[in-house]
Image (tube, rainbow, N blue to C red):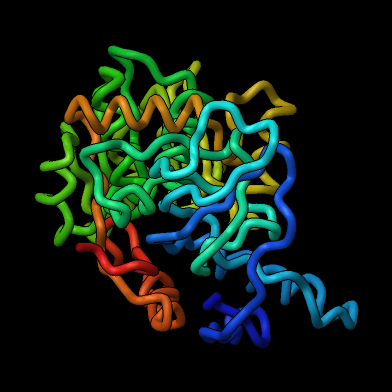
Amino acid sequence: MKAITTTGWGLSAKLTLETASAPARLGANDVLVQVHAASVNPKDWKLNYHAAVAFTPLLVTKLPPFFGDDLAGVIIDKGSKVQDFEIGDAVYGMDMRPRTASLAELTRIDQKRIAKKPPSLTFQQAASMPLAAQTALQGLKKGKAEAGKTVLIIGASGGVGTFAVQIAKAMGLHVTGVCSGRNAEFVQELGADAIIDYTQGDYRKTVGPFDLVFDVTSYESPLTCDGLIGDDGWFISTGGDARSMLITPFYRVFGKHCGTVVVESWTRDLDTLSDLVESGKVRPIIDSVFSLAESQQAYERSRTGRCRGKVVIEVVPER
């Protein structure tokens, strides 16, 4: 089969299409998926960068690659304990463990990490959802989001942000999105009730408070957003930035409501998202599509930080 292999690491890692061995023997709870599409997540190149920074001084220069989690495709084989899926089912999901690599024609994945693909979505659209949409859903839940409350979404036009805006509106929240002026109309079309253009000054001193501040950029912290958080409000981050990850536990010591989303893929959450899609409340936003051979370019596009929605990698061309 064809699959992406990596050489180097950190921000200098190179992705190359090579011939590779098919996945080894399936576990009892595994399915073998013919991958039709995958998608890019900033956590991939961020983890490679932070790993290089952390381990190179320790003379460690080789680690498993972090590329390729999201997938959508068709089951072509299954383990002995797989009961809810059949060969031929179109599915989507993700697994961040190295055993599942979605930048390949075939991959294995645990049945609890997938769900049946929403019928109205193409494989490319479905592949754009698992990590980003579940991060949005799980982050909103962790921040005690509920109807009638207010939420500020920092990074509202990106992969996670576009889902967070739509899911929050579906939950009945009043949504304020932070984005650049060029994306303001786009984020409003997703359902945001108000827009803050971060290029026009330090909004953190002029707006708020909010019941939930959801930073999906990973560049803010409870300290930088302290004035935005209501008296009993929450600060939730997607993590990835050292300042946020270090300060968040410190704030909890003093009774502040804050946390980091450590996303996991679960069938129940994917089914929830499928229901939102099929009811017309959530739609995937695709920034751009690259072939499997163009995976390097796909990650370079993600690293620009200028994506509207998700960057998708096409493994099997859509008909």
